[in-house]
Amino acid sequence: MTIGSGTFSPAGKFTFPRSYVYDLVIYRQGTTVTRALGAFTIHAVPPDPTFAYVQVRNNFYLWNSNRWQLPYIVSESWYKVGGVGAEIPLPFELDYAIDPTTLRPTIYYTFFGGRTDPQTFTLPEQPSNYWLPPILP
Image 1 (cartoon, rainbow, N blue to C red):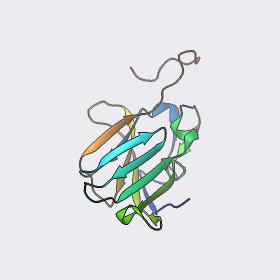
Image 2 (image 1 turned 45 degrees about the vertical axis):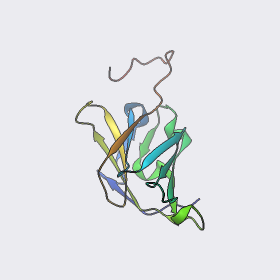
Image 3 (image 1 turned 30 degrees about the horizontal axis):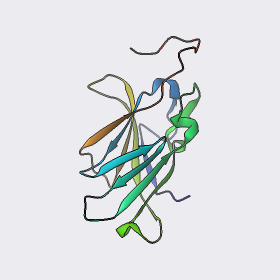
Image 4 (image 1 turned 90 degrees about the vertical axis):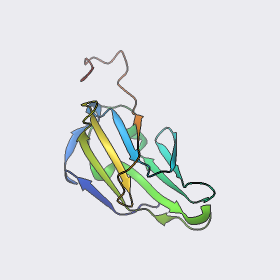
């Protein structure tokens, strides 16, 4: 596992329940992002074969009622220049905030400090037979 250094907002020790988080936003900065469960691949603009890989911990990605701190959500964050060679640690920012358009608690992932071209991924929600009612509509 390779992971770049992370910066966290509001703070690394900030604790929140996963059940309150509905979306993950990746600022893709003109790139293309694909998802396979909690694994995200960020493809550079063609013809550049460079790509980045971000792994969100499966026990966070899947719905649960546990409490989390931001530094424990991402388990891998790296890229490969030209699509080959060694995994290079990819520094990132991870933020917990209320999305201004949906008013839903959201996790924001930013790499290389760029906050353009957001892509929203909806996280799995609680099962319908869970005893608590949904937090938000």
